[in-house]
Structures are given as C-alpha cells and as structure tokens.
Image (cartoon, rainbow, N blue to C red; front, side, top):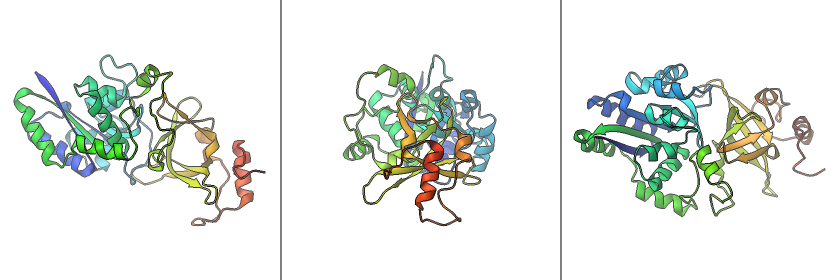
Length: 311
C-alpha cells in the first residue's frame, strides 16, 4: 500500500537537501514532489503547463539546473502557476495535480492536491499557507516498508511542526477558512465569506499574482506604495520577466486598477503587460526616489485611473 508523507520547510535549501536525501535512500524521483514559493532572489518567468510540472520539461529543466538542482527531481524544477498560490517553483506528481494535470483534476489547487493524496483538510490548509508565506513543500509516496524511513528523513531536514506553525499563523489573524484551494474551492464556496477578517496583512499582498483581463498571468506584486499621511495605498509595484533575479522589470501601477479575483486567487486588472511595459516612468533617473505630481498625473491618465490625492 502506498502512503504519502508531506513536510513543510522554511528554507528552500533544506527542502532541496531533503529531496536529495530521499533519492539517496532509493526512493524514485517520480514518487517525490516539491512545491516552493519564489524567494526574493527568484523572479517571475514564463510558466510551464501542468504536463511540464509533471515531466520537468521545457522551462523547468533550465530553472532546475540554475538553482543547483543537478539530477533527479530537482533538475526538472519549473516555474508554474498554481491556482490559489500563483507562481511557484515546482516539479513532480503533487505539483502536476495542483496545476490540474492529475487524474480527475479539473481545475487544480494545492489543498485539493494534498487532500487527494490523503492529507487531512486542516493540515493541508496550514501547508498551503506556509508555501504562500515563502516556504517549500516536499511530498513523497512510499510503500509501508519505507514510510518510517521517509518520515525520519524529512524530520531530520528541519521540517516544520505543522501544529505549532498553525498556532503561529492563527495568532497573526489567519484562519483555516482562508482559502488557497484554487478555483474549484472558490466556486464551491460562492455566496459565503471565506474569512471573517476583511483586512489583509501587507506581507500577504506582496508576492500575490496579477492577471490581465483574459486571466493571463502577467506578474506579481513586489511591494506596495502608501501615502504617508492618509495611509492610503497609492500604487503597487508589479514585477515581471527575468529569471533568478536577472532581467526583472518593475513598474508601479495605480492600486485602483487592481481588484481581487477569488477564482484566480490573485489580482485581476484591465491592464495588459504591453501597457505596463509602455507606461510613462513614475521616477526619473535611476535611483531617484522623489515623486513629482506631474508624473503621477501622467501615469494615472495613462491607465485611466482616478487620482488618489483628489483633483
């Protein structure tokens, strides 16, 4: 009988080492999967599809080699968009199911992938939140004879205590009803509030995916820009392009142009990537940090957005 062992790691390097240790113990790479949030040094690139996540093809091969993956599962790491989470570095069977390529998977989602692999719903939501906050998830399918050994390998690799981590998240205002399950769960929960809290912490906005009017992923929120006196969010800095910190573009767009889409698990905008690339500069020379109102007006007029400061 095959069983699934899953662990969350705060450190990407610890997750990588755990995968290497599992493979060294004789567990086939086809039975191991990893889903990791991009670190501050990783940037959004063109995403692979569900089959790429499963097979480690295309973009994944280049990314896996670049992050020091070497052979096995890690060499097939690719950047894929997972419903409810956005851009993730991932490979293996769990990643493919989360994207939507698994048997019977209609829309994907990390929580559904985990519960489908036998994890209880409560723990699955903690793992999903951990990945969203920058962690890395490793799952391995083993038979009964190797179950204890797989658990030991993951525990030795500094895996997170899921119960203790849940209490930390809950103390910050998170609840297990906060949904990162993807479109299927969002549709199933239509008409009800997924969280009793109407507010969101800034660190949960940063890194959230942004989609164009057609639902195409165009980038992610790198940071927010807030007016000091009023406390109003004026802009988000959208990051897109590049790989492993090289060639990234960043452009501020008015906060008003974004709206949260529960089905996508990210922000939708009427702005296209081409428009963002062609937008007037908000700042002048490189390194300049001072804002000038005429530049702000030009940027808002370009996007057809209302001035956040009034007329």
